[in-house]
Length: 217
Image: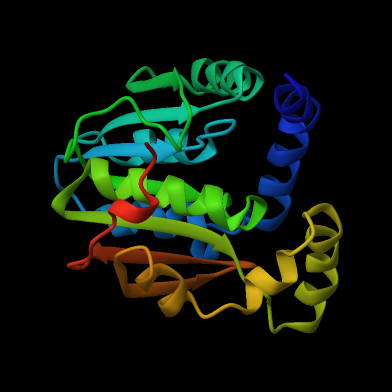
């Protein structure tokens, strides 16, 4: 598959970006995600888990969490499996699956995490993915979104230029969009935003909304 070849070539590059931009623990979005989960026993679905950076961080910090990481890319999952083994993490289940057509039951998860994905895909695919996230979330479940955010610090702006150069067309428009309006049309309300290095973590709750029109058929 063309897409899988792309991710195979870029899997290690994603890990380098992660170590470069999210290396400070106090302002790392990975730690912000962990904090958002609290200390409860939760079922968590990591959509487009990639090389497993979030899954590993969560599994290490939250022993009560049951976590499933899915990705459409076999190459990414192979890399994630290697990293899980190296980290000694045995509590994460990896599955190859289309995030826009999840093979899970309605209301199965307490938390769905979508990390650094929405800016890379079309609005149509994003809508399908968020629709599926909403479907598999429990009524009182949380959608956790980790996305890039334009820094205000001058030095960070210079470093962020590399991100802009490597991201697809439309990335800057995505950065400028109103997140409240963006997620409201998909049946979610932002309840908390945590600003981190080069990024932000948004916690969202379901709203009463007829979402059938953009659910995958």
